[in-house]
Length: 319
Image (cartoon, rainbow, N blue to C red):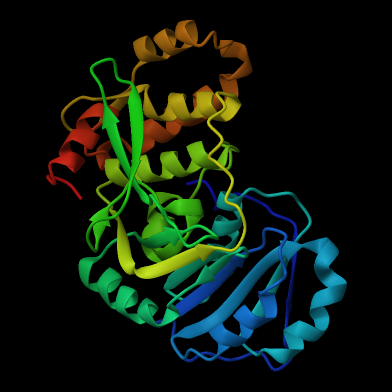
């Protein structure tokens, strides 16, 4: 839905002796560059030694081009994607899905460290058996303190969404989203879900939108505690600014109403939002038409609207 039509400008650089993989079953390992290069080559070397990793994709800026030519020749599995545009993390994941050759894609930020990558094959087995969309890990800060990694959604009587962060207490605990886009994705399910919505530039609301859409369409996201991921730098707090991204998020998730066998775009709810948040309809006319069209097109895929779908999810009636 959201990434098939996106035309990104980028360059691909890889070894002339590029590793030829024989099967799409395996993992494409994607690294979203966030500026740091301290452990970059160590990570490339480590990941190259795992047979279950078929390729390594590092997404970076075009300005890094001169420094990577030699590195790309050193690792046959390694592929660099150099961006001409400034993309947010969700758009980078969308792009990685388009470029990856495997059925499963593991996403990690460059300022993170996998404490036990040998658990990834276990996650791959489980994601296939359980037929889930995404499995994330348990996170630690640079001081090795546990970071709450389970996002629990709830909706009150006023249709107000609240997301609570708690520590994971057991393996395969359900969560709305994972930390910082990280985890092992089923590429097929990701594509069916539509990927991350580039119109929502704020990464927090972009991830929430992705997680809620997964609930609406009956997909699930889980945490695997044995997969331990540590930040090597201070992790920035979530940006909760109620900007344009927030308003687009509201249009997508507060306006549709469940009518028994699908959803419809409620013009009454739309007017309430416009009044409550002083939305100028004419400034959101394009998004309004697009979101209404998407809602109608996918109506029968919805298991519920914001409130009813989360209630079903909380009671394990839908995963």
